[in-house]
Image (cartoon, rainbow, N blue to C red; front, side):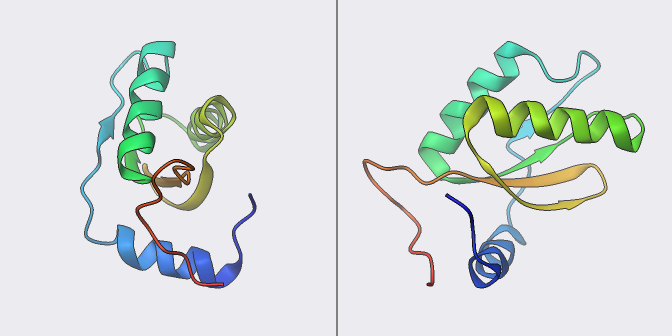
Length: 98
């Protein structure tokens, strides 16, 4: 599901006060982290992730790994922080604008 610009803007406003739920360490993006992120997205729908250090290409590779592995949408990326969203089809928690 592709997000419209108004939906992205709305989700960015909701994510502003959130703290990162997933913090990547020295090992970076692993399958275990992907599994935890999948659980967090199922529970919260909107999640902040603090990426591990590295250059821009390495951070983008981590984001791509997460979005492809979980089916989440990249809402926003600022520096080492990325905001991901995936709608919970069974019990949606966030009402998105059209």
